[in-house]
Amino acid sequence: MAAESLDAYFGASRVVRDASFCVPTGQVTAIIGPSGCGKSTLLRCLNRMHETVPGARVEGEVLFQGRDIYGPAVSAISLRRHIGMVFQRPTPFPTMSIRDNVAAGLRTLPRNERPSRSQTDEIVEQALKRAALWDEVSDRLTASAMALSGGQQQRLCIARALATSPTVLLLDEPTASLDPISTQRVEELVYDLRSQITIIIVTHNMQQAARVSDKTAFMLSGELVEVAATNTVFTAPRDPRTEAYVTGRFG
Amino acid sequence: MSATAMSTRRVGRSHREELAASARRTLVRRRITSRVMIGLTYLAAVLATIPLILILYYLVRVGARSVNWDFFTKIPAPVGERGGMANAIVGTGLLMLIASAIGLPVGIGAGLYLADRRGTKLANLVRFLSDVLNGLPSIVLGIFAWQVLVRPVKHFSALAGGVALAVMMIPLVTRATEEMIRLVPVSMREAALALGYSNWRTSLSVVLRTALPGIVTGALVAVARIAGETAPLLFTAFGNSFWSFSPAQPIAALPMQIYTYAISPYDEWHAQAWAGALVLLALVLVISLAARFATRSRFGLGGD
Image (tube, rainbow over all chains, first blue to last red; front, side, top):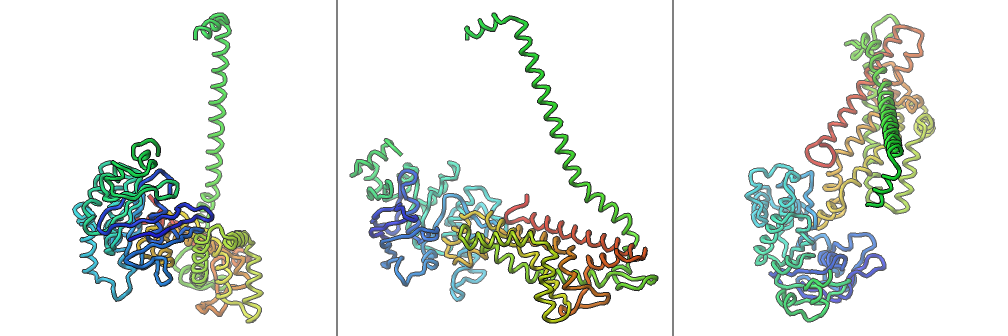
């Protein structure tokens, strides 16, 4: 996945400026930067969620499997089945059981591709196992998802995103509303998933970026300042602004 | 600190005592004011519930005697014979069914629209007009329904009555739906979109489903509200002393039957009117209770 001179607007204000970068397949890429620098917006451009906000638009290209996702022949809806997303706050659907939450994405598939009931059960189990939640909920799959703790709800959302077997997973500050133990579990999960799926994680927590990612992108006021191997960004950054940020001089 | 201490000492004992006494007086005055105000709100709360309690008490005392098997199984009979309001009860049910069949889809649809297109000029206009419609006197609605639905076909009908009631329901349901949908967080909508849900599927199977218990409550409150309406039915459903199940024919309804019996000169009919009032009130109470139960669902917003 790659972006080419990407600009994102809210009305007249340009919140992402001329961003170009390449996301290595099967690795974890972190986007860091101070609050309001446009990192979430950049992430939301990658699965066309940005345009769901009234007045928001995108210019430039995002290449996914060799095609521009903003091209005329691409449907944002089917694209989002291939690029999963998890948000800052857990968003389980309150009317659905744990099982139905995980299976929610499967219901949008075209009728001939939709899995049968037993296949769905299998997919739900696999997704919950990949999200490291299966052991905690396997005996109460029909219970309300609202009965889970915040950390469990967030892993449920990750399982829900994984159930449609996307090739890319976008995480928008997935641990921002979680306690330290839940945060650690989610981080371990990201670490374990890396071989199976391409992950892009937005975080305002530099230690988290250093812990989980292979590659780090630093953003400042809508500009992509530096994109390099995580080790390089934290130990030998090229740009003085990156160095100032990672050494804690601002942000 | 020392300066303050010095000055206090210099002012002397009597002045300090005076200050303390004044503070105590203020405290006492505030306590009394607080007690009086709390007492007044308490009184207002009691006064607000007294009418319902009195009405219930009186209706049961006067009406309960005439609520018997005949009342629920027989149609109105001449004075001296045992009659009931069976046709009016069924008629009210049919009218509520017709009104709900028209009013609920339109009201819920309009509410969905208002919540979805929040802030646009058209949405604001629709919301304003819906509020105006809500405040429209029901008799005006009745005359209007007569003009467009009764006069052209030259006879009264249950359908005309149902439509008049539906028009009353629509603004109530619209506002209830909009409010409930606005309670569903945007993040829920985004989560569905990010899973590959289309806009309409997100609205229906996530947003609407999450808001459903609240919308059901709003719908039931609207149904309870129109169950007792008389004015819109006077020129439309008109009333009927016999059985009728046809939407094209005049139909009886509890409120109209109560009205007819209440203004008659016969004690026997007066008793029937009281019984009808009691049954109607019971019906409304049952619907309201159902509305409360709908809110208390295990899944979904609201409740607990």
